[in-house]
Image (cartoon, rainbow, N blue to C red; front, side, top):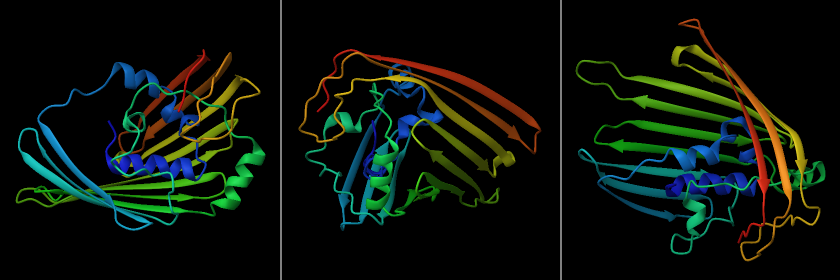
Length: 256
């Protein structure tokens, strides 16, 4: 289940026209969600709010092996009108479950979204206590490109110096295909991912709207996508490669 800040991040992607499903990292999302899911243990209390039109805050208290918590803050340069109050968020919007792969956007639709959403940016930070473990993220959108920078900082201890890891993702998504360049300071890791839609046969009457109150049928569509990733750890000189294929058939589905 997504926490509040992860939910806001997904709303940012939707509001700015970024298709998460059209990336290699999400190619097997439905399979992972259905086959590998954590079973909750202990308890977790999460208090979140939308502080202003552009900022969000959250505080978490949990008890697993020991009592711990975190505080987080998120700022977005775009007013996300698709973020629901916590009392009315649809349950399916917060669950990692089966995902219906929708038709990728046409060039005209993407240009319209680009004019409406001019280079928005998102900043996010989270501090864990009592460990003082810190993580931060920045997402910067361009026309068909997105830059994601993630940082993790480990505090100093009596026997060990503090350390940190920075990971950068440069992603490009143009509907028919997507590419992603990755660099991580951990092991000086370099990576490249790509996804290509080989086939897409969808109902011509498929609605383009994302109105939450609209119920529609999705009949007879199918899609086929192929992707691969290549990794190389410069410090350990260890390469890696993987490939994946996704074929989706859509019987009549109801989406609200």
